[in-house]
Amino acid sequence: MPHLTTIGFDADDTLWQNEQFFRLSEKRFTELLAGFAEADHLGQRLLEAERRNLARYGFGIKGFTLSMVETAIEVTEGRVPAAIIQQILHVGREMLVHPVETLPGVRETLEQLAETHRLVMITKGDLFDQERKVAASGLGELFSAVEIVSDKKPDTYRRIFARHGDGAERAMMVGNSLKSDVVPAIDAGGWGVYVPHDLTWVLEHVEEPSGQPRYRSVETIVAVPAIVREVG
Image (tube, rainbow, N blue to C red; front, side, top):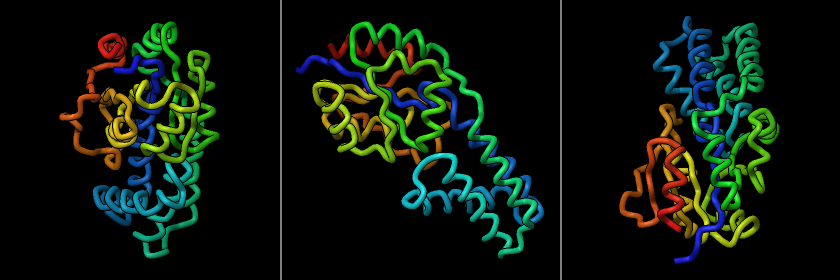
């Protein structure tokens, strides 16, 4: 079995908090439109808009904000007051400056692994927002490379691990999303380690690849070094 040389890490909700800001913003969105529809209905319509718009706007806060605006127009049949649209845009702008809260054990884990392996941060979303969070986290110095991508597919991992490592077969990807971080990395020929987060976007849910020999699941990121030693 090839020796493991490179470890990729997802960023949002793996290294720092992210989804909680989307949940809080959605709550504010439903409050703004409470006079037009029930919260559950608004949430479902917003999710439909997000799913519909992923191919147009990609992942991230800007696409989410545009989906909120679109949903507001649709559920009010075009009667949404301009003042509410303005407040929705304000919610989006606030998300773009939210503080970066590193998750417990992250720095210590990265420092330990950086002594023996090449670390690559692989994150998707809006370029400017992701660059801001990388800088604010203070974690960038621990990585050999940072890749901000529009989506995460098997070819994405093959390309990145070939560029920054020794190929996917000698690489491991660690993240909180089975759909984006774990399954495609395994399909690319690498290892996938699932570190669950209390909040994960519903569109990132897929079935756990329990039967895959290169799949591992841990409760917290601090358990990743033990998996790395096991893999060898």
